[in-house]
Image (cartoon, rainbow, N blue to C red; front, side, top):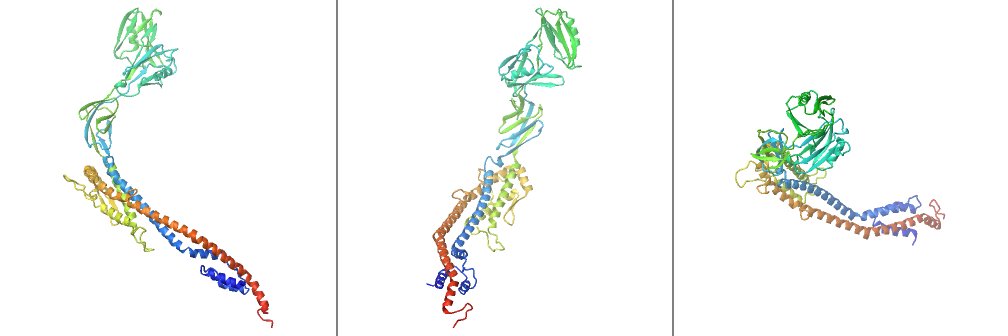
Length: 562
């Protein structure tokens, strides 16, 4: 077969697959004119493109399925959010069960109420607050100054006791050391050093409030030849009290009167002639009293320690009455006096009744209802958009023919017409309209805040009955059950539809893959081989034409030589 016949044969076989070969160019090549020949790659690509026509239809179907899946997933998400709102409104621990507590005197008493606490008004009288017991030591120059030699004993109201020696060479050498020793004894108290412009003291406080957490401190009476009292501020006077001095086995008690000074007390002691000499002194911290043996060697005992403690606040229980019932509490946070209510005592007002009003938390209910309206509008908006005609394409949404979406639209529209009729008595809230919720022309909902606030403030139980029903069978339960047929994980309409879309898409993928493997791959091999042969034959045509012309006696310009 000549090259011309070979080309014709190849072109004949290739022409049925692709229009990519330019016949005129091939004929021009046979006449010796300039031509690029056959672009084998382009010719094969054009042939394969034509062969893939069925694939493009299948891929278009996949695009539709993808759009349907995306649209349905968005609607599923919005519907699930709405269902969650209904579940929240239809539970005993939801927003409808939230409570607030209003106090008629919040400076003295505040309170909180647990979810579901019975609404009502209670009367509380706070007689006294619970207190933490506290003591403080005599003044020392600094935290590290050596304290007088003595001992102190802490006894708790629970019966624990511990004694701590003080003075040089002991664990209580100074205030800091003594605080460390006390804190290490685990007595339920905390010791710390408090310093100010006058000096430093050891402060000891109980770790918790209440009488049971109280404690006492005793210090050993001083025995020696010279004793100095704690300072009192300059210009201050003594209160009514007494001190007892024992010397030679004979005790003598000296009483002080209110307003007396240390100087006056010293004069009184010296006038007794009992073998001691008293003097009033002054230092940077105030005034004090010094008592010394007159002969400097005979010891005496005084019922005041050289390093003593003063009780600042006694530990005590709170005292109150709740609805006439007397209550004692170790803490100012009182539970159990009113079921579900925690009282926070802030101040004592004996004889002054304080009203506590437990009521529905209108703020939480309002927030939940407005959230329902927002989520409803999102869901109905997505659904309605599927039935809106696009002016540019004159088509509806990809789910317009889906029965699930048609049914969902009907379900949402019917839900807002729910009516509640109490089994007994009457109600002020029998429809969403009574809560200020109305439908717009596009199917969305709107909330009139004034109407809603009025219902929550004046008829909270009617609002709760409408939403929850007498036994969790009201509006919220009705809409929840309707939506549940769509949202159930395995058998709900959304799951069924999405599973169907996934199955169809998988089938199309298999169809496309099989077509590529079983047909397109072999076609590409066949076309490549045929067009490559045609290109080789085409490249040989000019030379063969010249040889043929020479044999026939044609010259290069086409004229004969005969």
